[in-house]
Length: 375
Image 1 (cartoon, helix red, strand yellow):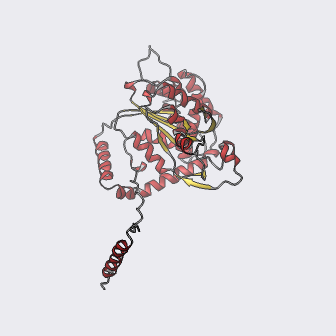
Image 2: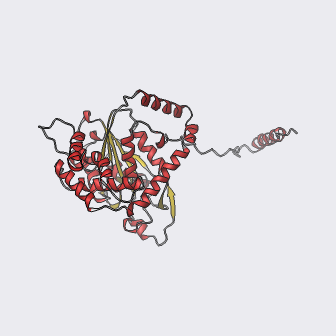
Image 3: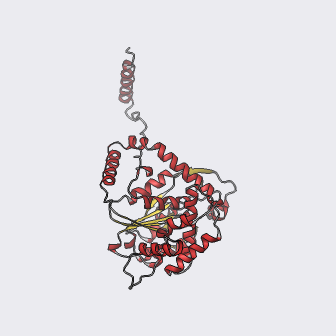
């Protein structure tokens, strides 16, 4: 017999053939199918040329209560790549094992009805979900509906969770959000306001937690968002195709390297990814201890008054974003520098149109910052 066991392998194969000939009803032995190998995602730390979008996504990763991110601009600028890369960067979340809605075991007040009935809750970890909401999705697909298969086969009236249930505690991504149908916009507004999805149809009466970071992307030239939905986005950023030659070359170089050898590229960026993940985790822990002095509150209020924003959501978002940025940068107290840094993404989409002012919303915010905080 050879050292590699070739003769032994041939003997086993002959025995298998003989057994199948003697007992034709005996199925041949099959090797267990190998689990599919998931393709690595493009590393968030390797993104280049879209710093404002990256910072906005990092802020909502530190504090999801900011409300979400609206990304407007050119196609092919890495919007969807950045969202999926961020979710892959974040540490897995702890959920109640077997829960259809991914309930948080550390938040008893937000558990679904099934989890509340359990006396013992087993905890497991799952990746942060990223759920795409297609423009043509039906309301049943989004909110959930009667499980037709179980109703026909087992005669059981059971609820089949929709996209909102799958996105709980994760990201709900809507490409071309400005083209979303009105009935889905109304549904999203209701869920965003209450943090719960209520289903009342086909004999089903159910509610479950549905808190997620809403990420929308689109081109404003193709249509505008309804003001009610626009106001629900905490931050709004514009992305443009890089016009700097060196930046364009680096973007193409990194993307081409990733397409050629995804695993090797991901390995190359493993350490930067680890440092960025540790930075996010540390910022989350630091966030409750960040101090917000009255001076910061006064600056936020004066900025919103100077811009004439409706309601108080602008001040609240501005303060939360500045606090998250302070935690991300390792600070202890919100200052004018953090407020200045997040003012444009937090306020530019909340401005009323002024027919006498032809400057863009970002320029108006910058002018207000100069008036309140100085140049």
